[in-house]
Length: 119
Image 1 (cartoon, rainbow, N blue to C red):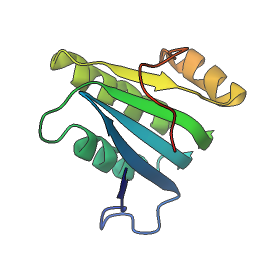
Image 2 (image 1 turned 90 degrees about the vertical axis):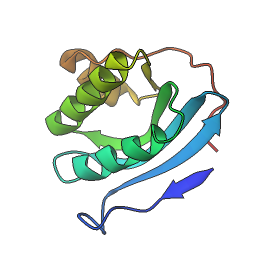
Image 3 (image 1 turned 180 degrees about the vertical axis):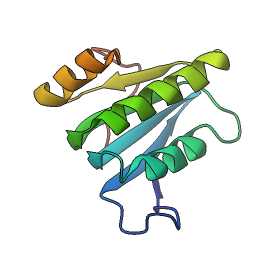
Image 4 (image 1 turned 60 degrees about the vertical axis):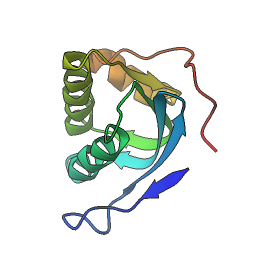
C-alpha cells in the first residue's frame, strides 16, 4: 500500500488516498471529501495510480463522506481519460447517499470489483 501525500497545491486536503497495486489493477482507497477543494488532489492521486504501467483503476469510496458536483465531474473526466487508453475506472462501495449522487451524475457504480477490499 502506498499513501500519497497531498500535492503542494493543497497540503491540508480533506481527501486522503491510498494506492494498493493488485496485479494489473490499482485500487485507490479514498477517505474524506471530494469537492471543488479536493479535485486537484484527486487528479494527483489518479496521476500516481496510472503512472508507469497503467492498468484499470478501482476507486473505493467507502471512506468518502461527501461528494460534490466537482467531484462527480472529476470522476467522469478520469473515467473518460482511462477509456481513451482502453482502460476502465470502476467505482465501488459508495455510501447510500454518495451512491445516489453518483447515479444522478451519471457515474456508474460497480457492485463487485475484481480486487481485494481496502485495508
